Image (cartoon, rainbow, N blue to C red; front, top):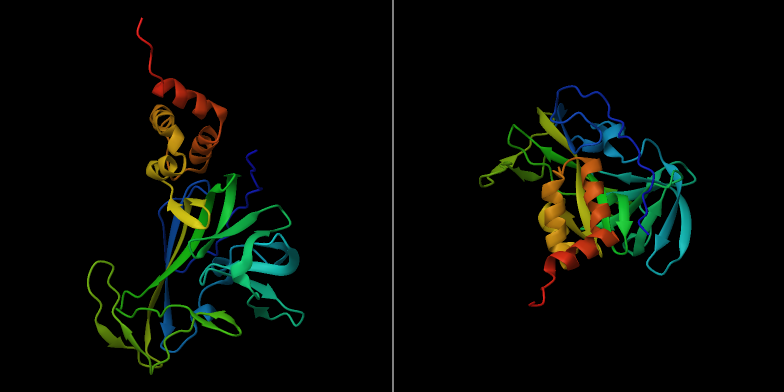
Length: 269
C-alpha cells in the first residue's frame, strides 16, 4: 500500500528584499532574502521564525525510534540546522536525546518527517523503503564576501553560532576559491538567506535528487516502462502532482506488467 500523508502549506514571512523564482506552492521554490546584520550577531535572532522552522508552531508529535518504540514531545524541525527541536516544561527549546535513533516523527495532521542524508524531509508518499518527499533547506551567503560558519553541536542542542569577531572567516564563492577574511565586531554587512523547497527521493536513509535517473535507480526492474511513461506523460520533476503520478506508476502493478511486456522475447514462429 502507498501512504499519502496530509500535506501542509508553507507559511513564509514577507521578506525585506526577495526574489521568488516560482510562486506555485505545488512546485519547488526558492526565496532569496537579504538582511543587514552586525559582526558577532547570532543568525537565529535575525531570520524570521516562520522561515527557520518547518511547522508554523511547535506541536505534540509522536517520535518512533529504530526499535519501534514510541514517545511523544512538543516538536518542530529547525530548517536552518536540519535538526528536530523540542519544547521543555519551561518553554525553552532543546535538542532531542538519542536523535540518531529516531526514524520517524508524526505530527497531529499526519504529516510525517524522516531523516535522510543528514537532513529531515517531509514524506509525500511512500512504498516499502522508498519515499517521494519534500526537502526544505536554508543556505546562508554573504555578497560582501563573509561566509557563515557551519552549525556547531553543543550539549544544549544544535546551535548555529555566528561571526564572533575573533573568528577568522573566509570569502564565499560559489564557483571560485575561498580567501581568508575577518569579520569585525559591530561592522554591518549583508547576510543572504536562500530558502528552498525541493522534491527528493529517499531510500534507507539516503537522499536522491528528484530526477528520472533517480527513479530508474530505485526501481531498476521497471526501467523501460518508467522511461516510457515519463516521456509519454510529460513529467515535470519540480511539480508535485507530476512526480506523484510518476511515483504511483513506479509502485503500481502496471509498471511491472509494462516492463514485462517491453522486455519479453517473442518465440520464433
